[in-house]
Amino acid sequence: MAQFINNSTNKIYDAGEKVGVLLVNLGSPDQPDASSVKRYLAEFLSDPRVVEFPRWFWWLVLKGIILRVRPARSAKVYRKIWTKQGSPLLVNSKKQRDQLQERLAPRFSSAVVCEWAMRYGHPSIAQALDRLSEQSITRLLVLPLYPQYSATTTASVIDGVSQQLAKRRFIPELRWVNHYASAPGYIQALADSVRRHWNEKGRQDKLLLSFHGIPERYVKAGDPYEEECKTTARLLAEALALKPHEWMLVFQSRFGREPWLQPYCDQTLESLPSQGVKSVDIICPGFSSDCLETLEEINMENRQVFFAAGGQRYEYIPALNDDEQHMQFLETLVCQHLQGWLP
Image 1 (cartoon, helix red, strand yellow):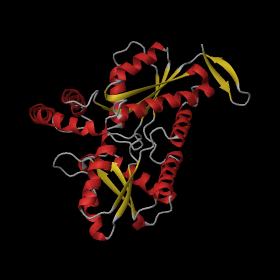
Image 2 (tube, rainbow, N blue to C red):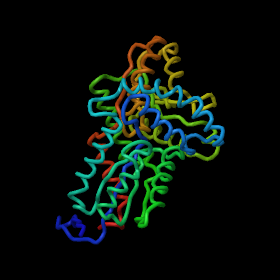
Image 3 (tube, rainbow, N blue to C red):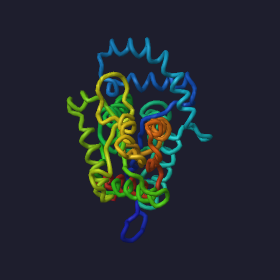
Image 4 (cartoon, one colour):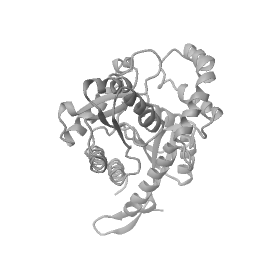
């Protein structure tokens, strides 16, 4: 029998429901080697939410070119950021799950069970649902760790969970957290992380807010991602009392030849020194955890681009990861979505 605490009396009561909270992030290869990366990319790039091309055409490109060439190259890049504990994304995601469980326990006792999964790779959504099923949950809150909604990310998580539940006899009552791009607690956590960085390292000429890009045609088809990124950027700039010339929104990680959301991060960094901007701070408000795209692409590759163009100082502000204020916000977000399920 599950239990919960009456906040006014701190008394623990029995309850008949057990709720699962599933945190889901993108994913990572199991190891930084070509075979592991190939398995991961095959799953990731086969998702029709991620690559919206005719299946027959994309299948030929993926199997005939990309999976023959890219795994070895990507494995070298993954090795640059790999830690003794493994993939930074996996390490950080597990910490987030563990800390969220610790935070919710005093409030709900054993009535809430937190799990974590990757949309692609391991631990899989299927594995996480198995663990939650073993806990006899009757209700499930799914929290994709993507602040801004996109069909390529949030909707793909919804697809993944739904596909796994479709194979099961018992399906728990479901709720989804679609986004939290403008949540005050999220914006405040970002702003405070920037202020702490400025206090420790000093403030540079311009703050760049870099979000993962998507093809422009996805936005034209109705994806709200660009507008949600702009909303996050505007609110963060307002929280920091920045003037228009002191910050800039950019998009990173484009792939292929078609136009993606602009301005491009690398091209912007290449052009700034000639405009008199010799030092930059850069933060990635679309990533709840540091990963390949922040640690290697932003903190290593784009750093070199800026210096090669004449830049003099480049400061990367880490993702929120398991930062205390970030975890406090996630706790609040989960509790808001649990209202009506547990007292």
